[in-house]
Length: 145
Ligand code: HEM
Image (cartoon, rainbow, N blue to C red; front, top):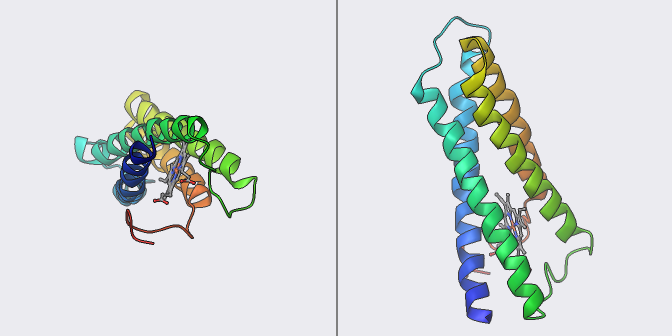
């Protein structure tokens, strides 16, 4: 169980960079389209879908970590303030919801402008929640303290 914990934690740590990069990429592709007349194309949609996908994977890995740590009596975020684990869980879930809305509304909005607006607004909110949820004091790459 302890080694499964280490493996999942390593993947969760690494995937956080994919989450962050795709979130920044989504904003870079969509903010310039705000207020213009550009068509919304697959190039704008791609990072929004990737942001949602990597975040969903992050949530699944995180929930599995909570379960394994609970079963093995490993303390979650030992050394951090006690509320941090719930802030991490809550803001992590919230960011996945925001990224899902970004993806679905940027597909369903009636106009190209609406698609740009939905992608930029909801991806921005998701990225903000992630920046607040991030345990910045932990290792920046897996297994390196
Ligand atoms: C609902 C969603 C999430 C849950 C349930 C969750 C759960 C967890 C748990 C249980 C840990 C292990 C804490 C420990 O080892 O003491 C952890 C660590 C971590 N989480 Fe999350 N997490 C979620 C979302 C996220 C998101 C969205 C990010 C960033 C994009 C993230 C980044 C990290 C990082 C960087 C660590 C530390 C990794 C390390 O020390 O190697 N998590 N998370």
